Image 1 (cartoon, rainbow, N blue to C red):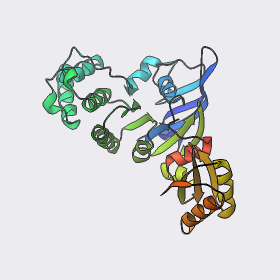
Image 2 (image 1 turned 90 degrees about the horizontal axis):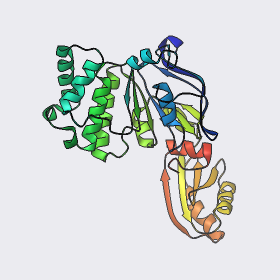
Image 3 (image 1 turned 180 degrees about the horizontal axis):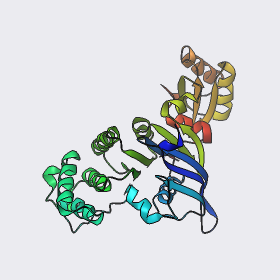
Image 4 (image 1 turned 90 degrees about the vertical axis):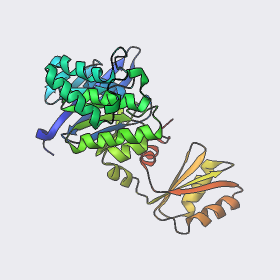
Length: 316
Protein backbone atom coordinates (compact mmCIF):
# COMPACT_ATOMS: atom_id res chain seq x y z
CA UNK A 1 0.00 0.00 0.00
CA UNK A 2 1.08 3.58 -0.55
CA UNK A 3 1.83 6.06 2.20
CA UNK A 4 -1.50 7.74 1.36
CA UNK A 5 -3.23 4.77 3.02
CA UNK A 6 -1.17 5.05 6.22
CA UNK A 7 -3.02 6.36 9.27
CA UNK A 8 -0.29 5.51 11.79
CA UNK A 9 3.46 5.67 11.30
CA UNK A 10 6.28 5.41 13.79
CA UNK A 11 9.88 6.27 12.97
CA UNK A 12 12.55 4.88 15.32
CA UNK A 13 10.12 5.39 18.19
CA UNK A 14 11.89 4.79 21.50
CA UNK A 15 10.96 4.97 25.17
CA UNK A 16 13.53 4.59 27.95
CA UNK A 17 12.16 4.86 31.49
CA UNK A 18 14.16 6.16 34.47
CA UNK A 19 16.78 3.65 35.52
CA UNK A 20 17.66 2.84 31.93
CA UNK A 21 14.75 0.46 31.28
CA UNK A 22 14.09 0.41 27.53
CA UNK A 23 10.39 -0.28 26.98
CA UNK A 24 10.35 0.36 23.22
CA UNK A 25 13.44 0.41 20.99
CA UNK A 26 13.59 2.14 17.57
CA UNK A 27 10.16 0.92 16.48
CA UNK A 28 9.21 1.44 12.82
CA UNK A 29 5.57 0.63 12.01
CA UNK A 30 2.90 1.59 9.51
CA UNK A 31 -0.82 0.94 10.00
CA UNK A 32 -3.11 1.23 6.99
CA UNK A 33 -6.55 2.74 6.76
CA UNK A 34 -9.40 0.38 7.58
CA UNK A 35 -7.36 -2.48 9.00
CA UNK A 36 -7.28 -4.08 12.42
CA UNK A 37 -3.64 -4.03 13.43
CA UNK A 38 -2.44 -5.96 16.45
CA UNK A 39 0.52 -5.55 18.76
CA UNK A 40 1.06 -9.08 20.09
CA UNK A 41 3.44 -10.01 22.87
CA UNK A 42 3.74 -10.99 26.54
CA UNK A 43 3.42 -8.61 29.47
CA UNK A 44 6.36 -6.21 29.43
CA UNK A 45 6.84 -6.46 25.66
CA UNK A 46 6.25 -2.74 25.11
CA UNK A 47 2.75 -2.94 23.67
CA UNK A 48 1.04 -0.59 26.13
CA UNK A 49 3.94 1.88 26.02
CA UNK A 50 3.74 1.95 22.21
CA UNK A 51 0.01 2.61 22.32
CA UNK A 52 0.60 5.26 25.00
CA UNK A 53 3.09 7.13 22.80
CA UNK A 54 0.67 7.03 19.87
CA UNK A 55 -2.17 8.45 21.99
CA UNK A 56 -0.22 11.26 23.74
CA UNK A 57 -0.25 9.54 27.15
CA UNK A 58 3.45 8.58 27.16
CA UNK A 59 6.22 10.97 26.14
CA UNK A 60 8.72 9.29 23.81
CA UNK A 61 12.43 9.47 24.53
CA UNK A 62 13.25 9.78 20.83
CA UNK A 63 11.81 9.10 17.39
CA UNK A 64 8.52 10.22 15.90
CA UNK A 65 4.87 9.12 15.90
CA UNK A 66 2.29 10.25 13.36
CA UNK A 67 -1.47 9.71 13.47
CA UNK A 68 -3.39 10.72 10.36
CA UNK A 69 -0.27 12.52 9.17
CA UNK A 70 -0.15 14.62 12.36
CA UNK A 71 2.93 14.60 14.57
CA UNK A 72 1.45 13.34 17.85
CA UNK A 73 3.74 15.40 20.07
CA UNK A 74 4.05 18.58 18.05
CA UNK A 75 0.27 18.83 17.65
CA UNK A 76 -1.11 16.71 20.49
CA UNK A 77 -4.46 18.55 20.78
CA UNK A 78 -5.15 18.00 17.09
CA UNK A 79 -4.08 14.36 17.31
CA UNK A 80 -6.41 13.71 20.27
CA UNK A 81 -9.44 14.64 18.18
CA UNK A 82 -8.53 11.97 15.66
CA UNK A 83 -8.25 9.08 18.11
CA UNK A 84 -10.50 7.07 20.38
CA UNK A 85 -8.88 5.23 23.28
CA UNK A 86 -10.06 2.28 25.35
CA UNK A 87 -7.52 1.74 28.17
CA UNK A 88 -7.07 -1.42 30.24
CA UNK A 89 -8.75 0.10 33.30
CA UNK A 90 -12.41 1.05 33.58
CA UNK A 91 -12.57 4.85 33.19
CA UNK A 92 -16.35 5.23 32.97
CA UNK A 93 -17.88 8.00 35.10
CA UNK A 94 -19.63 6.12 37.89
CA UNK A 95 -21.72 9.14 38.85
CA UNK A 96 -23.46 9.03 35.46
CA UNK A 97 -25.86 6.60 33.85
CA UNK A 98 -24.92 4.43 30.88
CA UNK A 99 -26.57 6.91 28.47
CA UNK A 100 -25.02 9.95 30.13
CA UNK A 101 -21.49 8.53 29.76
CA UNK A 102 -21.97 8.68 26.01
CA UNK A 103 -24.02 11.87 25.85
CA UNK A 104 -21.56 14.03 27.79
CA UNK A 105 -18.60 12.58 25.91
CA UNK A 106 -20.19 13.76 22.68
CA UNK A 107 -20.83 17.19 24.16
CA UNK A 108 -17.21 17.40 25.30
CA UNK A 109 -16.10 16.81 21.71
CA UNK A 110 -18.29 19.61 20.39
CA UNK A 111 -21.47 17.80 19.37
CA UNK A 112 -24.69 19.73 19.94
CA UNK A 113 -27.27 18.36 22.37
CA UNK A 114 -29.53 16.89 19.69
CA UNK A 115 -26.70 15.16 17.78
CA UNK A 116 -25.10 13.85 20.95
CA UNK A 117 -28.41 12.44 22.19
CA UNK A 118 -29.15 10.75 18.85
CA UNK A 119 -25.65 9.28 18.50
CA UNK A 120 -25.63 8.01 22.09
CA UNK A 121 -28.97 6.28 21.51
CA UNK A 122 -27.77 4.75 18.24
CA UNK A 123 -24.56 3.45 19.77
CA UNK A 124 -26.33 1.92 22.75
CA UNK A 125 -28.48 -0.09 20.35
CA UNK A 126 -25.49 -1.10 18.21
CA UNK A 127 -23.53 -2.20 21.27
CA UNK A 128 -26.47 -4.21 22.75
CA UNK A 129 -26.90 -1.79 25.66
CA UNK A 130 -30.15 -0.06 24.73
CA UNK A 131 -32.16 -1.64 27.53
CA UNK A 132 -29.59 -0.48 30.07
CA UNK A 133 -29.47 3.19 29.06
CA UNK A 134 -30.84 4.48 32.37
CA UNK A 135 -28.88 2.09 34.58
CA UNK A 136 -25.93 3.23 36.71
CA UNK A 137 -22.55 2.17 35.33
CA UNK A 138 -21.87 0.09 38.47
CA UNK A 139 -24.74 -2.21 37.51
CA UNK A 140 -22.98 -3.36 34.31
CA UNK A 141 -21.05 -6.60 34.00
CA UNK A 142 -17.41 -6.46 32.98
CA UNK A 143 -18.24 -7.25 29.36
CA UNK A 144 -20.98 -4.63 29.20
CA UNK A 145 -18.74 -1.98 30.76
CA UNK A 146 -16.06 -2.77 28.18
CA UNK A 147 -18.56 -2.44 25.34
CA UNK A 148 -19.68 0.91 26.76
CA UNK A 149 -16.08 2.14 26.84
CA UNK A 150 -15.68 1.16 23.18
CA UNK A 151 -18.94 2.95 22.34
CA UNK A 152 -17.72 6.05 24.14
CA UNK A 153 -14.38 5.89 22.32
CA UNK A 154 -16.07 5.95 18.88
CA UNK A 155 -18.75 8.51 19.88
CA UNK A 156 -16.87 11.39 18.25
CA UNK A 157 -16.10 9.29 15.12
CA UNK A 158 -12.32 9.04 15.47
CA UNK A 159 -10.10 8.08 12.56
CA UNK A 160 -8.31 5.46 14.68
CA UNK A 161 -9.55 3.41 17.61
CA UNK A 162 -6.94 2.21 20.12
CA UNK A 163 -7.73 -0.69 22.45
CA UNK A 164 -5.28 -1.83 25.12
CA UNK A 165 -5.83 -5.50 26.04
CA UNK A 166 -9.56 -5.10 25.32
CA UNK A 167 -10.70 -8.53 26.53
CA UNK A 168 -8.40 -8.98 29.53
CA UNK A 169 -10.47 -10.23 32.46
CA UNK A 170 -13.60 -10.92 30.40
CA UNK A 171 -15.32 -14.28 30.45
CA UNK A 172 -15.60 -16.19 27.12
CA UNK A 173 -19.11 -14.86 26.45
CA UNK A 174 -18.03 -11.26 27.03
CA UNK A 175 -14.96 -11.76 24.88
CA UNK A 176 -16.94 -13.12 21.94
CA UNK A 177 -19.52 -10.31 22.24
CA UNK A 178 -16.74 -7.72 22.07
CA UNK A 179 -15.14 -9.47 19.09
CA UNK A 180 -18.47 -9.22 17.27
CA UNK A 181 -18.67 -5.48 18.00
CA UNK A 182 -15.12 -4.89 16.78
CA UNK A 183 -15.90 -6.89 13.65
CA UNK A 184 -18.90 -4.64 12.94
CA UNK A 185 -16.78 -1.51 13.40
CA UNK A 186 -14.12 -2.96 11.11
CA UNK A 187 -16.66 -3.74 8.39
CA UNK A 188 -17.81 -0.13 8.69
CA UNK A 189 -14.30 1.05 7.81
CA UNK A 190 -12.97 1.82 11.29
CA UNK A 191 -9.20 1.58 11.65
CA UNK A 192 -8.35 -0.27 14.87
CA UNK A 193 -5.07 -0.81 16.69
CA UNK A 194 -5.21 -3.23 19.59
CA UNK A 195 -2.70 -4.71 21.99
CA UNK A 196 -3.13 -8.27 23.18
CA UNK A 197 -1.31 -11.28 24.55
CA UNK A 198 -4.11 -13.63 23.49
CA UNK A 199 -3.09 -15.62 20.41
CA UNK A 200 -6.63 -16.57 19.45
CA UNK A 201 -7.74 -12.95 19.64
CA UNK A 202 -4.89 -11.78 17.42
CA UNK A 203 -5.48 -14.59 14.94
CA UNK A 204 -9.23 -14.06 14.82
CA UNK A 205 -9.39 -10.27 14.65
CA UNK A 206 -6.24 -8.84 13.11
CA UNK A 207 -5.50 -8.21 9.45
CA UNK A 208 -1.82 -7.75 10.33
CA UNK A 209 0.30 -8.22 13.43
CA UNK A 210 3.51 -6.93 14.92
CA UNK A 211 5.06 -9.37 17.38
CA UNK A 212 6.98 -7.57 20.12
CA UNK A 213 9.24 -8.72 22.93
CA UNK A 214 11.41 -6.61 25.25
CA UNK A 215 10.49 -3.51 23.27
CA UNK A 216 11.74 -4.84 19.94
CA UNK A 217 9.84 -5.72 16.78
CA UNK A 218 10.42 -9.41 16.08
CA UNK A 219 8.05 -10.08 13.18
CA UNK A 220 5.40 -8.35 11.09
CA UNK A 221 2.76 -9.73 8.74
CA UNK A 222 -0.67 -11.29 8.45
CA UNK A 223 -1.48 -14.16 10.83
CA UNK A 224 -1.29 -16.56 7.89
CA UNK A 225 2.11 -15.24 6.79
CA UNK A 226 3.52 -15.42 10.28
CA UNK A 227 2.36 -18.99 10.84
CA UNK A 228 3.73 -20.02 7.43
CA UNK A 229 7.13 -18.61 8.46
CA UNK A 230 7.51 -21.51 10.90
CA UNK A 231 8.17 -23.75 7.90
CA UNK A 232 6.29 -26.73 9.34
CA UNK A 233 2.85 -28.20 8.83
CA UNK A 234 2.60 -29.87 12.24
CA UNK A 235 3.85 -29.25 15.77
CA UNK A 236 4.21 -32.30 18.04
CA UNK A 237 4.51 -31.60 21.76
CA UNK A 238 6.22 -34.35 23.78
CA UNK A 239 5.93 -34.55 27.57
CA UNK A 240 8.58 -36.88 28.94
CA UNK A 241 11.02 -37.33 31.80
CA UNK A 242 14.82 -37.24 31.71
CA UNK A 243 17.15 -34.96 29.76
CA UNK A 244 14.80 -33.22 27.31
CA UNK A 245 17.60 -31.41 25.47
CA UNK A 246 19.13 -34.79 24.64
CA UNK A 247 15.73 -36.11 23.55
CA UNK A 248 15.23 -33.11 21.26
CA UNK A 249 18.57 -33.78 19.53
CA UNK A 250 17.70 -37.45 19.07
CA UNK A 251 14.33 -36.62 17.53
CA UNK A 252 15.90 -34.21 15.05
CA UNK A 253 18.33 -36.93 14.00
CA UNK A 254 15.56 -39.50 13.61
CA UNK A 255 13.19 -37.38 11.48
CA UNK A 256 14.55 -35.58 8.38
CA UNK A 257 13.81 -31.84 7.95
CA UNK A 258 12.57 -31.41 11.49
CA UNK A 259 13.42 -29.06 14.34
CA UNK A 260 12.98 -29.66 18.04
CA UNK A 261 13.47 -27.47 21.08
CA UNK A 262 12.68 -27.61 24.77
CA UNK A 263 9.97 -25.19 25.86
CA UNK A 264 8.32 -25.14 29.30
CA UNK A 265 9.53 -28.66 30.22
CA UNK A 266 8.28 -30.20 26.97
CA UNK A 267 9.87 -30.91 23.60
CA UNK A 268 8.24 -28.97 20.74
CA UNK A 269 8.88 -30.90 17.54
CA UNK A 270 8.17 -29.20 14.17
CA UNK A 271 7.70 -31.54 11.19
CA UNK A 272 6.47 -31.29 7.61
CA UNK A 273 4.02 -34.16 8.03
CA UNK A 274 2.80 -36.07 11.04
CA UNK A 275 2.60 -39.34 9.13
CA UNK A 276 4.69 -41.96 10.90
CA UNK A 277 6.14 -39.42 13.31
CA UNK A 278 4.30 -40.38 16.50
CA UNK A 279 5.51 -44.01 16.54
CA UNK A 280 9.02 -42.72 15.83
CA UNK A 281 8.85 -40.32 18.76
CA UNK A 282 7.78 -43.11 21.11
CA UNK A 283 10.46 -45.50 19.81
CA UNK A 284 13.28 -42.92 20.04
CA UNK A 285 12.23 -41.90 23.55
CA UNK A 286 11.91 -45.52 24.70
CA UNK A 287 15.33 -46.51 23.37
CA UNK A 288 16.89 -43.52 25.16
CA UNK A 289 15.16 -44.40 28.43
CA UNK A 290 12.58 -41.59 28.46
CA UNK A 291 9.05 -42.29 29.67
CA UNK A 292 6.60 -40.40 27.42
CA UNK A 293 3.70 -39.10 29.49
CA UNK A 294 1.81 -37.30 26.71
CA UNK A 295 1.87 -36.52 22.99
CA UNK A 296 -0.18 -33.82 21.29
CA UNK A 297 -0.40 -32.72 17.67
CA UNK A 298 -1.54 -29.36 16.27
CA UNK A 299 -1.02 -26.95 13.41
CA UNK A 300 1.41 -24.03 13.93
CA UNK A 301 -0.06 -21.13 15.89
CA UNK A 302 1.07 -17.59 16.60
CA UNK A 303 2.57 -18.93 19.81
CA UNK A 304 4.66 -21.30 17.69
CA UNK A 305 5.96 -18.25 15.84
CA UNK A 306 6.80 -16.54 19.13
CA UNK A 307 8.56 -19.64 20.45
CA UNK A 308 10.63 -19.89 17.27
CA UNK A 309 11.66 -16.25 17.62
CA UNK A 310 12.35 -16.17 21.35
CA UNK A 311 12.62 -19.74 22.64
CA UNK A 312 9.88 -19.15 25.20
CA UNK A 313 6.10 -19.28 25.42
CA UNK A 314 4.09 -16.14 24.76
CA UNK A 315 2.58 -15.99 28.26
CA UNK A 316 5.86 -16.22 30.18
